[in-house]
Image (cartoon, rainbow, N blue to C red; front, side, top):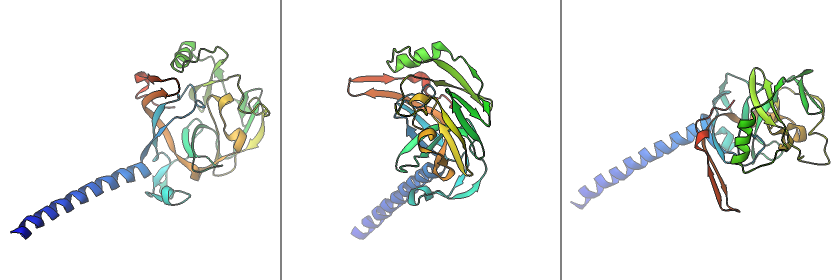
Length: 250
C-alpha cells in the first residue's frame, strides 16, 4: 500500500520537474537567441532614451544565434546571418574595453565608411548629416522628467539614412583634456566593425574615445521601451513615465 502511494507521488514530482525544466529552458533559449531586456543606466542616449528606461533588444535582428554560445564563449555563433547593422540602428553591445559591461549607442558608421567630426558636425564619406531644429516642447518635457531645468542645451535633430532622431549638444565634456567632443579626425571603419555614438554626444563615451565595435560584440538591436521608472534613492524620489511604455525605438 505504501509503495502504491509513493509511486504516483514520485511520478507527479518528476512530471512537474520536467515541465518546469522545459519551461525554464525555453525562457533561456528565447533570452539567449531572440529577445532580452536591458535597463538604461546613464544619459548618453538622451533624448531618445532616458535614465531608467527599460527596453527589449531583438537578438534576432542580424541573424539566428546558436543558443547560449554568447554565454559560454567570447563570441556568439550563428545558424545564419540575414542582416547587417545599418546606420541609425540603436544597438546594445559588449564594451570592447571590458566585455563584462554593456553599452547602448547608435550606429553612425558601417564598414568602409569614413567618419569625421569638425566643429560638432559629423560627416560620413564627406557628407554632413542634415539637421533641423528639434521640438523644444519635447525636450522641455524630457528635462522636466529628469528634473533638469538647465537651458544650456542647444537642440538639434540629426538624420541618418532617412531615419530622423533627436540628439542633445551640451556644454559638459566627458574629458576636458580631449577635443573629441567638437572635432574628430577622419577614420575609416574597418570590415566587421562599426562606429557608434550616443545621441547625447557631448555626454557620451563612444567610438570617438575607445574605437570601433566588432560585430561579434553586438547583442542586438533595441526595439521598444517596455517600462520607464527612475528611482533616485539619494533624494528619495520616484519617477514613473507611463507615456513612454510601448515607444518604438528608431
